[in-house]
Image (cartoon, rainbow over all chains, first blue to last red; front, side):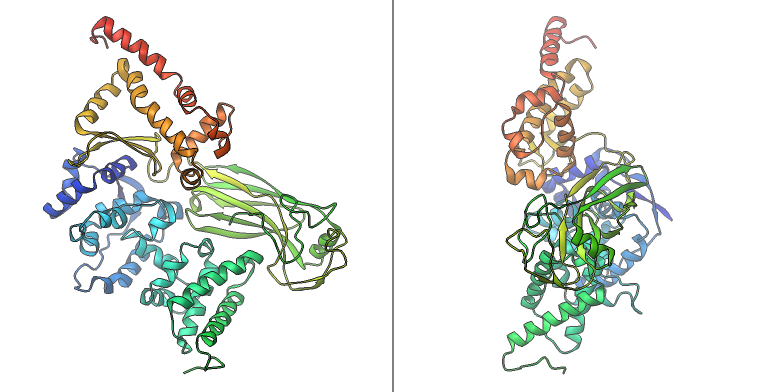
Length: 257
Length: 291
């Protein structure tokens, strides 16, 4: 086990203040040694009270996106013991990115491949605060995608995670809605969409958008959290069938393949 | 979840924003107590409406409180019985603002719901309610969790003064979109700033030149409703809120609009400009050699 090394909030602010400069030094330096010069300190990181195992992420595949799901699971297994208040803290993710997982972020989101500084702002640093950034940052995003889809009641707890990495749009659209904070609601929606696809329905962005809207609409008259996962999944599945029938008027009923 | 004044397709007992019921009242009183490891919340329901009380006794309806902390994605629906409840939230599950929203909801489908205290517009009407439908809405309570023992390291100040190393950028910038007010200074000024801040003889002068204008900019920005909505939950804004309330003022867009940003900034910094002027005189007298 090793202590998680953290960059202070002021140091992170200093990085945010100097995006062009750090992009230039990152293109010239093969590792994160440049941080010492940047902060004029021999050890810019301090040890936190939290520890993690020594783990590594996959950084050697040509198709980088294909490694996301596997890397997300590795991250989840190694960080899931941390408290939620730490897991949503900018300092944890930015420090991992500029520290322990520097090579991974260079592999997946090399800022030098970017014309401007957008990658640095969104994938290395927190451009926004709180939840939104957690789903943009190159490492935080992978971890939280698993945290939001992991279902310990399933034989394969990563079943919904795998499904969401195949269709990333589902989570991308869901996380900006408050109801996604509820595990019951989240998993109910994911289970229903997965079942719909498995039963022969075609996933479409329009259906996904309509489902997200439908849940918001339900939340106007009901306390969504009062439903069980099964009750809500049934409502979502029924709505998907309505949408399918509406989009395929020649087909009067939803048919299994 | 936040409570909004809205219309429902059936009467809802919501004393704070409608009059669907007469001679009736509902709320769940919420008091909180924070310790380093947990937040202890006391819920005490208050209900005066015989019809809804009967539904609760028959377990067809129930008191609930919806708890949500957007920062950590913590969200719970807590069932509360008539006698109330003491509930503990682990401190490491939450961060920043937590919202508590009290309701009475249908715990099962209720056919032909009617209530003798319906407003006369609804009298003699009956409604079909489904499980999860809202019967009554209470007053939302928010709690901001400020952790003294920060999880990753201490957070000593709401200001960060940083050096601009990007060559193409010139001038001083005040960025208040993050949790701290970031005052960005060009290299030379940054180095001078560090020296001046460490010198008690010049500290008040620096505060007057840099901190006061930064505070004034923040107050002026907060007068804009859009900015207020987006940034008033930042740590620097929460700290300013505390300071403003301590001065006996309110911290909302309307109150801020009529507020003199210069005066308030001066008061918060305990008249640092006056001290700064005295310091300048002292430096002039001594040639800046002392201290």
